[in-house]
Length: 338
Image (cartoon, rainbow, N blue to C red; front, side, top):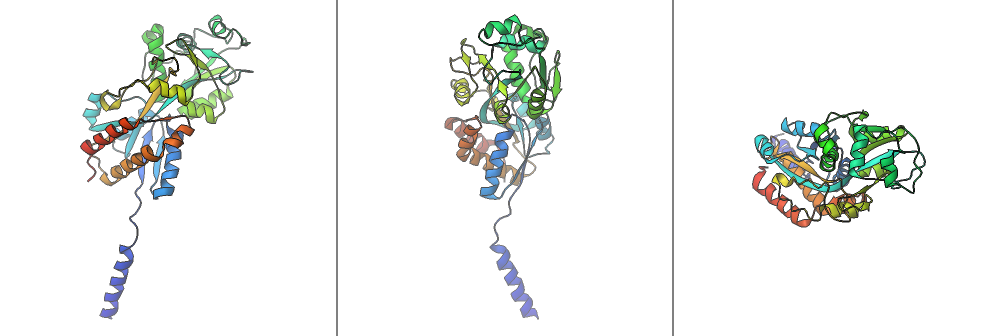
């Protein structure tokens, strides 16, 4: 009997010793801006490694709160935190991809890219000063387009949002009135309009509301086949939102701000999209779950190495190799995963 037990135990030990290591699940929460890409990356990563990423698309403000409360492996935000805030909470910050925020409209008979706006006009629309689509300021920019005498309904984010930060940061740069009356942040006091939760909510509201205008990350506009506007950039050129114009906006960035937190709105360059942004990951330097944090860094290493094509298919710009190298130095120096 004892001999049987010995052999049985030995057999069980041998069986368990050849099993593969258990997959580690990662949790993240925050920005809706990169959600289409993170979902695509997560699916491909699970197929390749067996490890799952559970990412909650709940807005940058909520993502920042969750990583500060240590309830997720990483937070995600489109509004980069400043160096003092990163230090206060013991966080590192790094960019994953670059994308663009676009104005989307629901105007009868208007096709994607058929109308053009500039920054000051966009600000006046969201301030509630321009009330109909055939307003003289819009007609001046669109002399060849037949614009309806239709009331404008603006749609904005109701939750704390990095997309809102990017959008209001841009409007604050191009409109003194906007800067003094509303300003820039993840949440602001909107002068008028409808509120909706997430990029998804804004996209849905614009699709359902005649005469409306909102702002979303470009992937949402593309996936929902929405009519976007062209924009006049800092160089006075009318540009389309696409991979090339997002890349042009980031071309001169040195990524020298604390936590790589450079702002890419209203950049110079004839081909630059004016409302471009990187999106960022926040992680603790001394995480409570070191194994999960180590797996998260493996995931982002994989994403930098293998996720570029998937990013481009959704019109996000992969980070330059030089920036990726600097990010990995920060990981190695600052994040304790053992």
